[in-house]
Image (cartoon, rainbow, N blue to C red; front, top):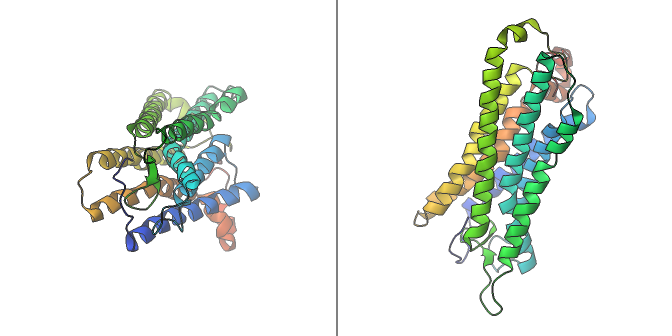
Length: 295
């Protein structure tokens, strides 16, 4: 996320970026609300963890609203937002990995007819806060480490969309953390597929109760991994290897940052029980607890 610090541009690119992030935030909140208030919508702890991480991601990129053009934003706000935007992708990636692990644990415990270890789930919930704190404070300390008298290395980016740090350290830490968790997610999903194939006879013979996940949810998770996880890796590569790209191309790449929360909202927000809460006039069609699996 490094860039040259020049006067921020204004106009429609800023609006598109902000609208996409706001749209993702609204969709995520609309998806979270039924899980909090509706008895018919039950979700795992790591699911809530993933949604909250994505909401924090959107808020992080929207903190500069009102300061994306014109005079430089307050330095404290700029440093705080820079720390958040470097930490946000790593937080979502860690939360996604924890979610995939719990899916596997629930599925394997169902097929093996064993009780799920709640302590393992609790440990998984600490992954995303730890990833967030590590990347956030590395970014903050890097941003405040320039010698006295030098120009600050934390400034609003040339695009004006957010504040960033003119140092390779936060970008490297974020990139390595995201790639690590995405790789672990893919490995876990591949292992789960192999496990399902080997246990397919037992899978066909067991009727999954509510509280476990069906194959359709696993497919949704794999889709999110491809769209959201690989999307952020692609954006990180493009942003750090295309310093000479045109202004329009740069904004298109930046707008792709909304892929992460948007893909999450669309993939998991389209489950039947969540839609059924809003389509209350057709409620009877969404009352089957085994239709999508309550996770």
